[in-house]
Structure formats: C-alpha cells, structure tokens
Length: 473
Image (tube, rainbow, N blue to C red):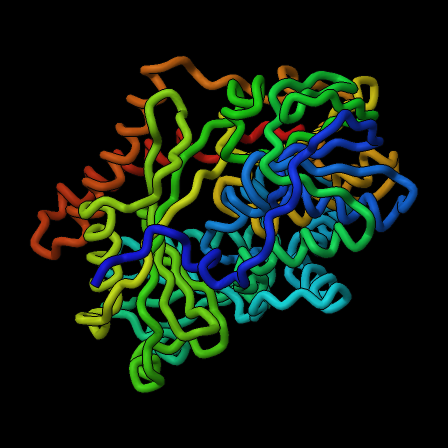
C-alpha cells in the first residue's frame, strides 16, 4: 500500500481555515518569529502575566509547520546537557532546577486542563532499553551509575531487569532498561494547534503565511510590510537558515519517522506499552518509539544533514530511508512482520555548535531567543517560553537565573559559529559512518571481540566530540 508523506499528526487535525497573513504595517510591543512551540509558549506566558502587551506571532507557513508538528511526541522533563549546565551550581539551586525540569510534563498538563487542549497526553514515563547486543547493557549500566552519582534518586531513574522490562514492553533480545517517570507522550500537532488557539483567546495575533524578510532591533519587514516592535523574539529552531543571522549558529538536521497502521488489541498484547510509555534503545542510532492513542506504533531513528545546512522541505521518505527504519523496527519487534507502514515523515530540528540549548535576552536591544534543543524540544520549549517571558518582563525567578540562560549578550557572544562547508558535511557524515559501522558490527553476534572493542572505541571517541560542551552560561 502507498505510504503517506504527510505527517500522521497533521493528518489527524480537523480541517480549518488558514489564518490571515499580515496585510498592513503594524506596531506591537513584542514580535515573535515562528508559530511553533517556543514562540507560542513565549506568547502564552507573556500575555498571561502582562495582558496589556500587544503581541504578534509571524509564521511563514502554518502553525506547527516546523518541528513542533513533526516530532516524535515525547514531552521530556529534562534538558539536553543538563548535567554539564548544573556542574557548577550550588546544592540548593541545583535541587530547585532539577525539580523545575522534572516538573515540565506536569506543568504542561496543568495548562492543557486550564485551556481545554486535547492532545492525547499520557504520562507513562520513558524506558531507556538495552537490546540487540550486550554492549548496550554495558552502556546502560554506566549511564545509570552516572545518573545516581550526579544525585538523581532511584525514584528518578530505576533499573529494570529483562523480566521487569518485559512487563512494560516486549522486545527481542532485551537485557534490561532504565525507567524514569519524567516523560509524557502527546499528539504534537494537536498540542501546538490548541496552544495557538489559546493564545488567540488571550488576545495575541497570529499571522500565517507571513514571512519575516528582514529584522533588526525594533523593526521587521513581514510580507512586505513594516512592523515596529519593542521586542523581537526569533523562535525558529530548525528553520534558522530562513532567519539570518541565526543560520550561522544553528543548523538544521533531520529526524525521520514511520508509523504503522492501527493494530488490534491482540497484537498490542504481544508488544506492551499499555500505559503511554515512551521508549528508546541504548544505541547511537537514536531509535525512539511509542504507542499512539489510536493504537499505532510510531518509530523514529537518526536522520540526516544536508550540505550547507539546507532545510529539507520534501519529506517523502526514500525507499532506503523507509527500509532502514523498518529493519530496526523489526529487529526489536519481529512480531510486527507483515504489519503495514502507513506513514513516513520527518522534520528539521535545530543544533547549535555547543550541542546544547540556549535561552538568551538582551534588554538593551530588545532581543530574546531560544533554541538548539537537539530533538528534545517539546518539553524544553515550554521551559524556554516561560523563561523568555520572565526575562522580557524583567522578573526575578528561578528560570531567569538558570545556568542555561544568558543575559545582556547578543547571539555572537552567546553562540559559537559553525565551521564552514565542506567541514560540517564531512564531519557529520564521518560521525554517522562511525555510528553505523559500530551498530552493524555489534549487532552481528559472530563479530570478533577485538573488532567489537575497536568500533566501540572509535564511536565512543566520536560521540564525545558531539556531546554538549561543558562550559555553561
């Protein structure tokens, strides 16, 4: 059967009329570029705390067109590079910040209830699983030791034996898992669509098909019209290339997913995931999967990078892209052999050179921005929106004093530029090649021990180069 190229998520949205584009000059207090999670959460928290503000959100396509409507639907209570950020923080502040991060799913749920947003929210936690080869179990145990040594409790990260894991999800060749309760799954397009409606009810103007052609401190050109703004807040994540000069600091990389047809209860009895758990494998292929409300299995894995950091606009997955994800899916769940794949899609996510997120504000120029979530943006964008709102309103809060926040600095002083091409493209493909060779060797039970050690050492060294840098602030 043909596989749909449009995302499963947007296909499930009801048909609605497009929002009007900007048709005349405008003057606002806050101009937000991008109607994804970061931009809309920023607008939401600003308008809730300062109802008098005139806020406009400009989107060059439609609400949630970017990564916000195309992701894997994980709402995580953590932040990329969290341990590095918190390394130099005192015990009391560290405990408060950890509670802030772990509480993200619950605080999002409070907003969903308050605003009447239905998006299939289920807080079933997340399973980091070791499967397919024993080296994954070694990495898993090392990661658990690091987490506990850093101060996380057994309640935050708990080891599951293979038998205990099978009570939650039944994977081929599973060795064990780490379970954390700090994760929910959502239908992301429903969440971003509901959030846009919520901010409009508060009085925020959302303009679709309104491309920001130029911007600088206090002024933008949007769809040919002049916009005067006290604050300019770019929230474009993977689409930074469309918003110079952000593209120098934040590159678009792609993550790709497939979804099965809805499956019968008997098939799900063979798999598990009955409580809305998110799950992923402890490998460098970055596999991730969960059960949707309509009983599909959504399964994603590491994607691609295009030369020059170009955005990918056509997400009709190639035969190779589909077969690679299907192969990984069936290695973990051979019981799904013969189950049709109904959808294949992807999205552009943003990656900074530091391989860690940023939230910054410069009151002198009226500029604020956030991004670089590295695939964890559904939850991190909620924190970013709350943080940017507090920074713009000059509130003294736990959010504004977090080590991932930079104040009174512009982009060039906060973020490191990416190397020029072809170095970026060569580097990315070298990393992916190392990870792919490692996975192929380790997944082959006949591979010689010396070869297994060699590929693991090479891939581990490469992985260290693309881990979040230790310098925070």
